Image (cartoon, rainbow, N blue to C red; front, side, top):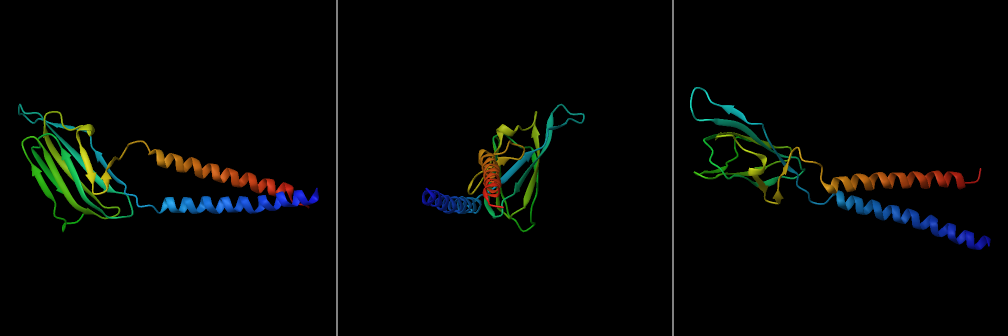
Amino acid sequence: MAKKTLQSFSMNSVLIPLLIVIAGALFTWWLNQERYDVRYTLSEKVPVSFGGPLNEAVQQLEVTNLSKKTVDRIRVKIPQPIIAHELIKNSQADVEEVFNGKEIFELIYPTLPPEGSFRIVLKTPGAGLSRGSLEVVHGKGPAAYGFAATSITTKISSIATIAFMLLYTVLLVRGINDSPV
């Protein structure tokens, strides 16, 4: 009987730390994956009509790279005409490409370093832009709206971290209670 208890204790004492090490390795691998976090925000519409019949709106679009890696070829596409725009660059050395047609506006920004951003002040005819009418993408995928809810990946990782800490705490408390005094 004592031999059986010793074997089960030995198996648990090896299995639990092994599972913790594997979980830690997987979590480290997940954290070091290549991720890009490019966000954009669009200001509220500011109507402009100083004595003229033409109603216009002014808005600011800001694109920020929140990741730890440089992002290439950020493209801002607006499927409506833009009367005027002003680009506030991240670096004066950056050379952007702009196409401003009668029905579409497109800007391609070359590279954006970590924590870098650029802003576009836009003057549009009519009621202005809505977030749904914009398309902001970069070389690795779409950009996210800055005030959007957190992603499912972030929620899952938070829940997993809390569950891991609770499990570890329970195992420690259980180990303290089982130890001889």
